Image 1 (tube, rainbow over the protein chains, first blue to last red):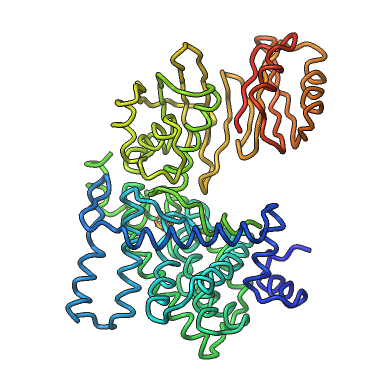
Image 2 (cartoon, each protein chain N blue to C red; image 1 turned 30 degrees about the vertical axis):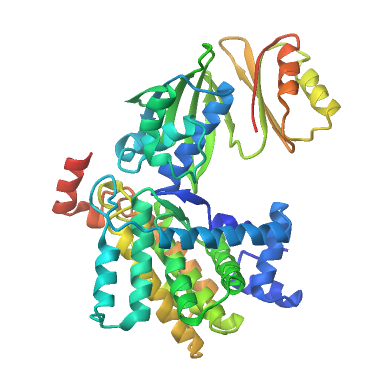
Length: 289
Length: 217
Ligand code: SF4
């Protein structure tokens, strides 16, 4: 039985074996890779630790090799700390965590690809501030990561998690879908709500193009991590309130795949369309390359 | 399904294909050479040549040649480390016909004068494929222990090599044989389920008709 070709099959598989979704994902993944469940859990703990280390070790002075990226997370932190944030400290924390991760990635620090390096900020940007606010234990965060991975596996199988193949909807969009499901889990939602949270987040970023300036994972990637995290937060809020995606989650993923296939190559990581084609981006490119 | 393909790898940024994959390619090159690299000519192709510098592909490749893994925090400092450790490297660009856009050609020399030349591609998510070794076309990912044997294209070699593996109780996962029509050479690529001991690789190298045996564990 293939479980991760659709959200429907994944949830049915968990139900059939009478396991919570996180545990079902852990079990199948451990079985498929020949890892013990204990070793998989430990590796996930290391993964969580690596996300946290990246957040804590953020260097406000670091700049990417192009010099285009760095320092913005710190600007936001200072503004939030001064009480100037419109949306308050929790959302402020999410936004700055996303920027810290995205900037650290561009500055060649150690990050966790989730599902890709460019989108590495989205998941930690919802998990770490949530844990800071609610004093969530690591074991709960690790379970949430398994939930996120389960939804990510379906997105990868049914559509794609590569900007070169399907545009940024498959990187930041997929990360947002995974993060929304994880947040719904953490906040006590059921499996249907996780699926709808994921679907709503994917719908909101559907069609997002991959248009990195000068081909570098910097502009617009870093800031898109912030928007991916906000997308996850709003989708999770909606799903937790019992709001459903009118289009079933699997059909949403199919639509995402079709949209990805319809995107011209210039909008799929080639650095030739979208923002990368603007006069300013062209000028930056000629200076940098 | 592997959860760590979705949440992972833990790596030094900014790009799994341009940075993490590049480290892995170079590390495989180092293993194919059998250890320390003294001299390296690094020729970048396609997107590696176009955007490699901004992605740190150059530093990542040198880091791999020094033996670092793709999550090593010293990757950004690899050029300075290479200077200290006596690795001389030179970058260039190359047009490889029909190659994947993220490809590189590495010409490596050991301190004792052994040499290896490999062409490899970073195919996404930090995964790689070696596409050519010492000019011979082949394909392997180095995700499993892999034994690569070059032999004079004559009967019996395949059986001899599989016998040696069986005698050690090493299970073969995949076995490819590629022929080089020009030189009368053949190359076997054997992916195995268990780590390959150095003594076994030496035994294979001593078999009649075998020109070279190397492994990546
Ligand atoms: S714009 Fe492209 S490279 Fe940047 S995060 Fe999105 S998919 Fe990745």
